[in-house]
Length: 182
Image 1 (cartoon, helix red, strand yellow):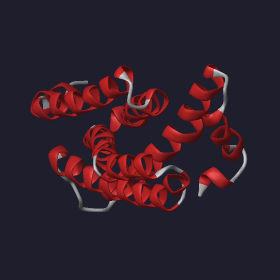
Image 2: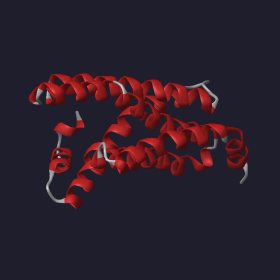
Image 3: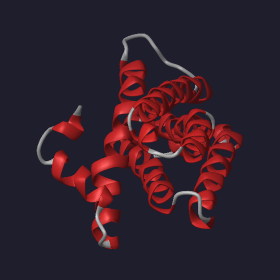
Image 4: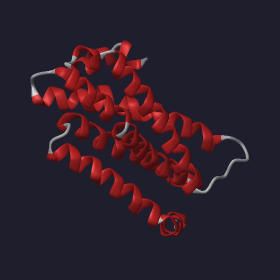
């Protein structure tokens, strides 16, 4: 919905710019930031509910579900709009990609955001910095993937996203101890 309101209409229109820097700016501020905040909004609400202190791993799970739902919605929306303008072979490939790997990547990006949002709830003194990191890391990975697409940099961005989430989760207990220090 934000993409239909100023100034986001202008920012989102830059995603198709022929100028590389304008496209990067548009992808990051017009697309990735908006989508990452939208997907993370559910997690922000979840961890702020009275009496709900959840383990970070549980919050990541809920984040991944939020991202997966968003990715599926976006994939179906693409099927009904952009993919219909393509030839049959291209449309078929895009349908498969947008209903399999892209929902998975959205789930991973939101899982990364949820990880930091969970720690922000556990360590209120570092809340604002963790919120910022929660949105910026997935937005940078998301924008990089969107800009580069299926070339080596785009695929590397997707792979890095998965590796980061796995690394964060494997270091969850150590992170809890580190953040509790003053």
